[in-house]
Image (cartoon, rainbow, N blue to C red; front, side, top):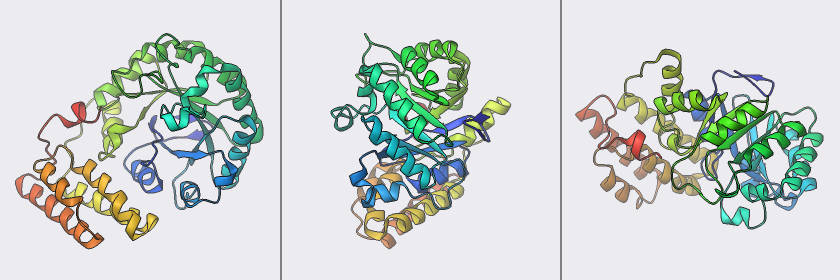
Length: 340
């Protein structure tokens, strides 16, 4: 797929997720089949550029191209400066966040709150595109502010006119947060109105759902968020299904054990032992969610005080699974029900 000047291995995108799509997770998803992985959003407040969190989010060392960095804010000049800062520090694509529904973001009129002010949207997009003329700029937003104000078609036209190279649309309004089912009619309509690539996002949890959304909306690609938490191999499963119409077999327990182990090692190195231990807990919980005996394991694992005991618990858990079956098996229909 051609996207923002890059040739991608496929049309599968990792959605930017705060506290999730750090460098270790992005690298893992790309290794397991994603074409693009967008970073956690980086503040446009220049006073925070030197903070540990911002520096870590701007760390792309060893990351596979293309490197896409999402910026968030509501002031055109500050957003332009943030784009320049990140482009100067390795970003090959600048993505603008107008999709986050979190109150702490929307209360300062950033994220999806911006969709209420279409003239401001235009000023921000034009300022960012002008600030980084040699770096493609993309935009992520929602279908609208609420169900009575689904203005994604208008925002999409503004984006194209402003020089945005591609858009991603989450099939919910800001008021919906992450509740209810994503709707794809708005995305399908937007696709008929503009010429730049459109990426569909929301509730894409299985290879079949990815195929359906691509066919229904006419979108150029799909973006996957929560369904990839603890299941980053979903990208290769979808890639294979879209290419062949056939499902890959469930992954080997031994392989996922190794994937988890390598991910944890990367987290410990990236964050340091103390913070890495704590961040690893949520990833281990996601990896084991729905697996036999995982509820008791997660309760125990979250109390472990150090890395050696955490790794030992992971080894024992996957070791028990492997004794039962060489392939990963879930107690429930995990991909369809628990990842939504």
